[in-house]
Length: 165
Image (cartoon, rainbow, N blue to C red; front, side, top):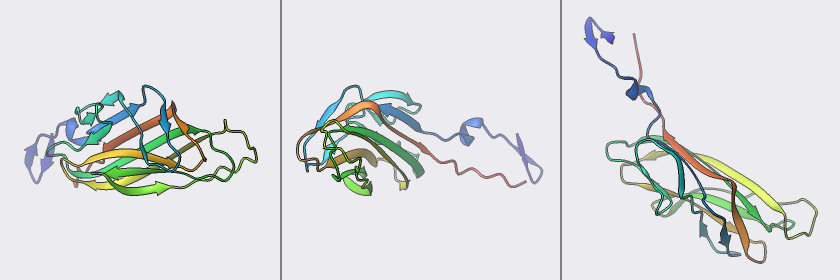
């Protein structure tokens, strides 16, 4: 209970939590074709406190009445990355690229088994009904595997409750 100029107001802890929130992983490896954008299939939920993650479509959907600023984080592990080949990941909002990362593998080996773990974070002003997905594209010369090991996608709404005594 808070006092607001002599008026007592009830403040439930639910209003001070970063929710909705979700944390998902891949249930199996997927193949990524050279030079083609591939949606990362994060389809296994670890946490989804507001049932906002659509595992069947591998996307987070902002619930009704839950617009605001959200923090997103994603990491993928991909193999088959030979020297100086690009791998990029993007967060998409309603199918449109928001941000990307373009690390280069420069390990000095020509082995096709090289693995790379890359990730990114993004803050976005989200509207109810908007959906968010992660994609990857690589230029290794042939197919690569996006591995379920070390691949994950998380997000949560930043609290906007303030207390001014």
